[in-house]
Image (tube, rainbow, N blue to C red; front, side, top):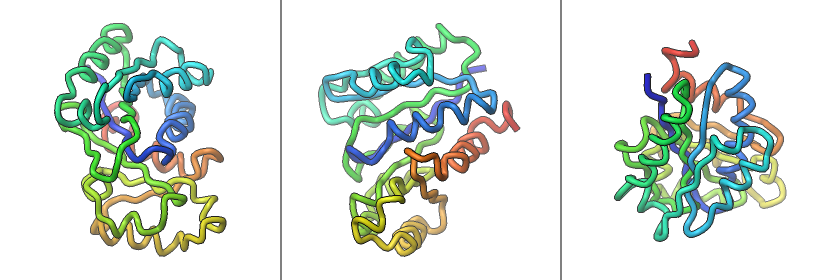
Length: 204
């Protein structure tokens, strides 16, 4: 059985890596065997952060250097990411889940369905409560929209309830989950969504 593949994308600083760090122990506690492929422009910074975290075996984290706009290797030509994922599956035949983290990109960033089965787009409260109203393809087309850094709302003048309502409205009721990845708020709900969407036949 091949591993399910999911993507996590979003703007720089939205909290994609923090979300993965929070998800790893929750998913592992539920019996999910996982690995991660990170994408950056010309560095392996996010991969190194995960390797140093102590949350996952370092060899289970691979880095792809896009060398161009980050969306190039997750949408236009995902070959490098497919190769990295295939290598992880060969090294870890029991993998249930491969997580692809996109390099930080804009609201137009989307994942090719040749690469992933299901994908998450992360925005953050500090980026402004007008992000849902901008209706970027990432916000509109993702399978799950995560609104992160909810703890910052009082400090940046954001009406969190209104932001979430507007996000649900532009997504026509499709899933939106509010998180504070640093403190673990909402992470269980994100893990539940992943399991329900792509691992239901393995971890029901």
